[in-house]
Image (cartoon, rainbow, N blue to C red; front, side, top):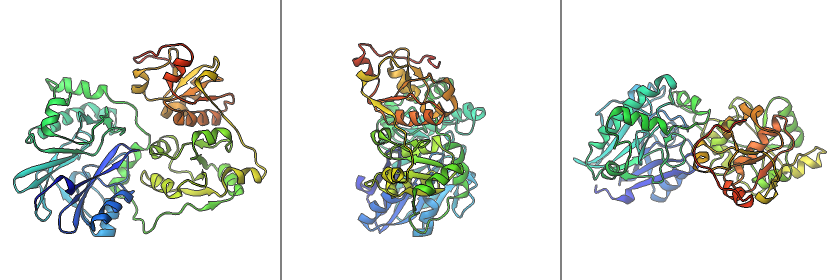
Length: 459
């Protein structure tokens, strides 16, 4: 078959910053690469073309999402292709460096590219002898390479040096070869994230600063300098993917709960997650609940801030999609979903329960409160309010005692800041305001200029 751009269908997960891929093989069959357990986008794309997934290839044992390969094997009879070194505990075709799979006109060649993980493979797609593109997973990504610290600090330098060799191996492919990475902008597996999702080998030779490193030591320094924090759940999913996620035979339910059941869940050590917009949470919420607005980044913050071992109940608005909550939770292995509060906050209040409220204020109504910035380090360094106390949202629960009393909490827009305020309220703080906006709004309202660069600002 002749291969054209329309045969490759990117499957973008905006929230996790990842791209899976569906390749139309031209005969009603398809190849899926790095498909997530949340297969809704893949199913929609396959359905439009009448495709059945015949092959499901995983470039590595993912830390940020559960693989959909086992589900595709169950549903479509897909042959799972993955590294033999991954020691996966479910049926698959174990591949080593140089192994090829005949896709029926196209060929998929495994290239060992360790670094992001030990067992990492890239997959080179060939039409005869012509290199069409390479699925690089967490090896070469656009203008960077994926992080090498997921297996522990004691392995970080070793894996960074492996990443150096892997990138150079990929760079030896012909310039016309397309580069199709999994990790990209917004992914906590990227170091640092770029803006473009795909590229070519030729472009990367000219634009990737890591490929421009004159030697291995310089490469390692540049790569490790871009490593920021990452969600706690990353430490669990590699092994979950090695064993394989449970097959789902239907869309998991999110049962209806009354107010009494929600109270009982809280009393028994469960958690209430309020997924309504930040302004709705501010106006009134269940005391002790955690605000994580339902948006693209919902799964990231759910997995960063709460354990996967306790039951979760959700507070929603009537117009919010319950299946979105379920799939975002399930794709990162959160399956103890007790249900949602039927009738939302009006039902909670009608049952005679109290609610709490949080100030959600414009920049010119913050007064002289201490300013807490909960953004990531790279965001903070790019521009922050002078004198701000910087505690990343992911670290806040463990460092709530470091937060000044009576603060205004801020991020870029307000969603993460509202989550931070809910964490501080759970830790016992009561006089908290959340900035409706970001640092530039605050600086303009207070006649100040933002400061750049990292600094130790924790009180």
